[in-house]
Image (cartoon, rainbow, N blue to C red; front, side, top):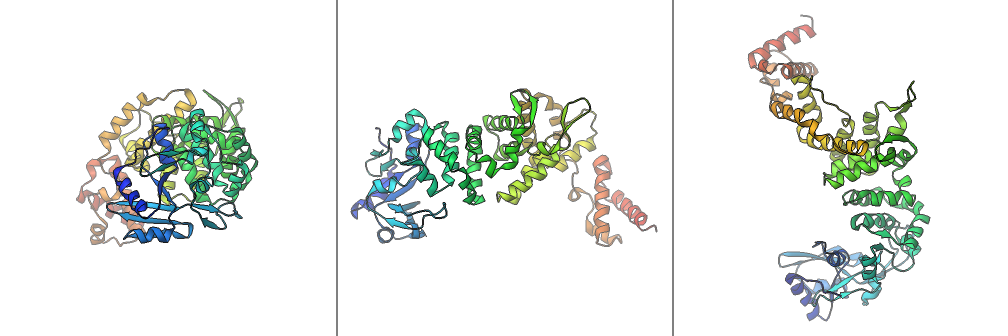
Length: 450
């Protein structure tokens, strides 16, 4: 087996452990990815030195997770997180070990890990790679296999069920049959995992090069119905689309399109949730044709509930739901300049590219190709108009100007400013201080019939 190319700064770091009669290893993903030819400088270290021994070796050490054997060492210009070899007790809550025991045997530490391809270790001095669980064979076979007895691994931490899907998506591997069988039988235990941890794994699946590998696996194992029941319901709704037999299949195609074109995470998540309310909006019209009236707005509302449940940030939730709510907007050449500017204002200039990308993914999922070339006229008009007045702050008058003219600072002033903006959006040449003050005076008198 080839050696791991240990960087010189890590060799120097490891030499301190050697001089104190201890060993240091790089473990997990960095070694796996090296063997696969994937760049990865996100290092995890383990050692036979106990936390207090590591603290004694270095001048600056932060006890970041000392209860579980983890400390962060500040060494020269680097920061290294180091964990002592350990074994773990039972997992009563299927999330955290009831107890942790520090050990001196590397094999005991590696045996507690989840999958064979994550259990490699590389000696930080000579780069020798240690493979105690035939992980190299599984890499060659493109298989994700649990270490030891699969049921025990998933009973220890139910999140490993989602990690199984994530690594299959990330690496393009298949799950080992026994590993998948155990994960499926224990799928209900995912409900014991916090929403934050579930979302973290889901986000990594969406960020992978082929997200639907993981999403389909979650569906097959019965996990999708637990973590995203709204999405799972879309499997029941048939629709006639190119390459999609039902709504969920259409969604999968849109998500993979977003990943194929390396679109942002916002677009990928919006693609996942953009049609989530179709089961709630489906009607059959008088001609027997299936329609989903208002599904864009309803999907945005439902997506907001889902994202709140998953503990997504407010900013991410707002941005993604904005894309979903507007993904059915269709430009027409007869739009006035005012209509184009209201579109820019509603979407936000910073979100327009992502909205178009979501629409293109939706088109690919529906028709097998995007209509990006049809957006050229729309994009040109946006560029022509995007620097014209678009918000109250772009007006030639301010609230202070209106106050000096005798209009009290109140809701009435806010309404007048918005009325002035609507006028200026349609007639930008009227964005003149004197003109706006005169119009504001007329509006104020009209509101109070004076």
